[in-house]
Image (tube, rainbow, N blue to C red; front, side, top):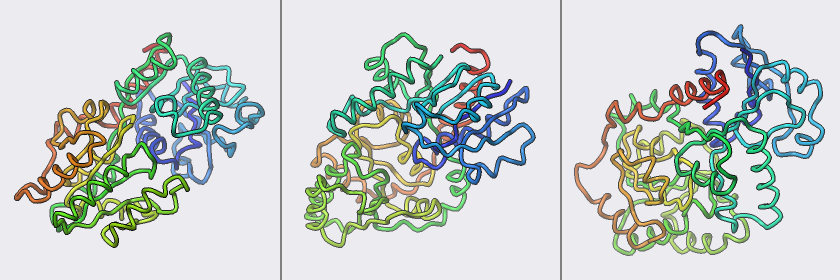
Length: 360
């Protein structure tokens, strides 16, 4: 069989991590299949040496008018010669006539309409409904996301759970974490958006500083990402002073260094589809303090994390202080069973099985 895979979002954050994690296992599937990778030829250069891989250059932006109305006919002709088309996100170009399979990671916008304008929400819902309608099967990353997709889009299509997973580079870096000295730092990793709960973390951190906390809060993200509506958060940061540090854009190596040397990672999200930073932190020997929203309770049910009441800055502060002043808590090592719970090999095998059989 020949599988066409949309790789135009290979460098995106969550979607890119998911796709980059799956691609090597797609190529290793048996019997050996052929793959048509659609996207940027420079980004896909590492795969050109594989005999069963063909690169199709395509620079059409995902979710653009050109994608849904004027997608390159030469590209669609090549795609339609394949047996199956797989998109790791909910954007599907026009003109595709072969069976389509899609991953919808979450459906946050109708669940949190305040994140966009009414027009923006309407456009996103059009893309969601279109992907749902066209796809033979939908993949998603958690039971929570599956339940929300069914709520907003219906139960007429098979929806299969294919978890996100730890990137190999974290496992490779793990071997070097035993000699890393823990610093008086707390890390937050994620987009600087409302659903990530940074506002609650800043309130909790401010309360902790009043009680004598000496740690620094490192926000792995850019201060420039704030919109004008985020002035309240900026004012809170300024009131705390030098104890809050923005890294700006950093390399994967620098990210892993910050996380592995931190005393604690805090994930105060109020909405997620899966959420990898706590898993990445634990792989690197750093404890994770996370909100008790349903999806995190689901994903991390078996892991040695600490939960706090979502949106409750006082409870977050109390848990923060308790963990940071508890002796002999860090670092720790995940068991082999937990390390193997979420892997891209398992995820890809489930996707490939569905694509090949044409059924869940």
